[in-house]
Amino acid sequence: NYLNKFEIMWNMFKKSEIYWISCIVIGLLAGVFYRLYIINPYPPRFYLPGLLSKSLNPTSRNSDEIKWIIPDLKADCKTLKNIHSNTNNKPYNIILIIADDLGSNDLSGGAGVATPNIDSLAKEGVKFSKAYSGHATCAPSRAAIMTGRFGTRFGFEFTPVPKELAIALAKYENHSLRHPLLYRDEFSKTPPMVSMTVPLDEEFIAQKLQKYDYNSYYLGKWHLGEINGSRPMEKGYTDSLTFLHGASLYLPNDHINVINAPVGGALDDFLRFNLDFSISHSNGHNFQPSEYMTDYLTSETVNLIRNLRSTSEIECEDYQQPFFITLAYNAPHNPLQALESDYNSPELANITSHIARVYAAMIKALDRGVGRVIEAVHDINETDNTMIIFTSDNGGAHYLGLNNINHPYRGWKATLFEGGLRVPFYIKLPKLISPGLIVDTPVGHVDIFNTILAVASYNYISNDDTNTNINNMKMDGKNLLPYIMNIDDNAHIFNELVNDSSQAKSISTSEIHESLYWRSGHYKSILHHGWKLQISSRPKKMWLFHLSVDPYEKNNLIGSHEIEESSNVNRSDIEYNFNELYRLLMDIDKEQAEPLWPALIEVPISIDKTDKVQENENDEYVYWAN
Image 1 (cartoon, rainbow, N blue to C red):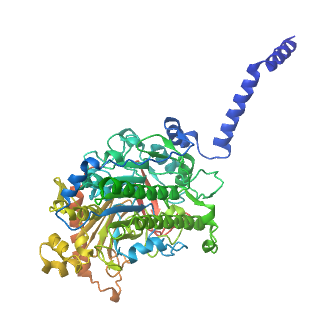
Image 2 (image 1 turned 120 degrees about the horizontal axis):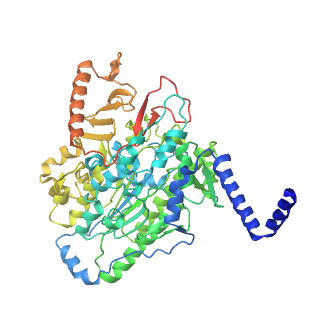
């Protein structure tokens, strides 16, 4: 009887709508379970940041037409002309281009592809052959560029990341010998990623340029704050087209024109699963760009340049208001994605590694973008009057598995060896800088701030903003113009800067910085007069290198029992310089602020191997805190 009753009830249930709804729900749950647990090793929390972001800020599938904010100059035209009437120079335009994780060996064919457009900036301007990033990871380095100060001076010591990423790296990153250290006790002291921002009272370069009547625009990666008061348009930029959280896909993973190259590991998987292909204009809603991200940022920069000039010529007759554009590409940061057309380019046909070929294709797109920007400046007849700066935020990353990305330097992104800190740094400004100049004394990202201000202030009597202290804040950067200007053609301007033309020769050949400094948690370094000291607590170790004779950091002079005769270093020099650098490092370290939030994780990084190569007990390594 019970079986008969059950069969009757079951048949009634199958004929009802509830049955089909239940089947659909069970099928969906089974699919989710299969997706999350069977074909994927990661738990649902791994996807939480992406799910929250996409639900709170959904992305429109339709690309917006960008209408740039260009202030009406009619009411200010007469005033602006009067301001500049005391000078024979028209205001200089400034374009700052920042690549993302570009290795020191990635240009000029080092990655397997030519970069003629980026190379042209060095050939037609100045190349700083010993240029150092503001930090060995992206956000603090970008903060140094924007403020002219070490990020550690105002507590911006660690790159903003979600807590879920720290957990993923600790649990799923493959380390056979040394394992990540996760500090769960610090989670309660850590704000959400959107609140991890540069302090709001720090003044950015675009805010300073407002004094000089610049219209400023930001395109691309930000990663310096997402809350009110910390976004580009609240930091002096007239308009913006950005992904605030610091990363984006280049195209959807399943796009017909994209070639993906997963490199493996928890970080790459986390980015690939959680990132969206989206951007936002004027702090508005998120939408999908109309083309591959690198090309899209380039296209909108070109459109902006054309619109700026076509508008100002009509409204202000012969006066053209200067512009400052920051173009912050996310290329070639992972996740690695290339256009199929670039991947299949004949010049890449000999690259046998799929990952290396996708990476080279991404750099090809980056170089194409720089070339289009240069061409757009030429098209508006502003080449001689426009300063173009090119750099990268830090060195190439070990987790891509590309052995020669920072060759010939040791180390990677997230280390304080030269491979993590050395970056390309070129400035082109034909009206002031002779072509083909090479500066081989150390300079840094912190110098970009004061150098831009010096260029902007040529049209004004006062050069106060190029001093070492601004608004009672210690500035770490220097104005590079006295070292790179064509003195013969610009003697009147040069003399204003140095106040004494007899100083010209000595200034142009002397060291620009006495010291450069870096810190990430327990790991610190200082560069001083050609000597470099690194100090780490995990492992408890120090490295001392005389870069003038050992530029590739092969011979650690601390604990070295044998010193090559050709090194021109004796033991008394080693002892003296170690003591001097240690004292300086401790003194500068005391000047820095406490981190705004604690490090959540420390990850072991082999100095000489990518993370795709088996670790060895004898490998040199360091734990990177973030």
